[in-house]
Length: 143
Image (cartoon, rainbow, N blue to C red; front, side):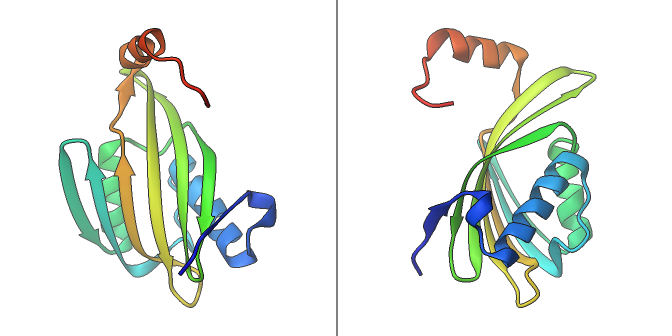
């Protein structure tokens, strides 16, 4: 299967709808129609890895890492025949301050366009001091 880089305006309808639902899930926790009932997720963090099966378990796993809130900026969507990869930057606030992370989600879709298998790769959550140290030490060529 080959993938292509695309923007949200050129995505196939099924993929575009899933990406929109995925971003809503990241920002608000709304998961209706996004995951297959028996979704399998393999979540890789900087120093940990967990696997879950089922919608409720998937929502609980995401919420335990950080609650769905804030904004998710889509950087790239790679499209396959029945799958896509979503690269995002998340920013949110909680009682501990402002937070940032970057994630890649590899999503396999079932026949109804729901995510049936999901692999997550996350940088881990950066607090304001980590973001500031990074900004002082590194000049990024792209945002």
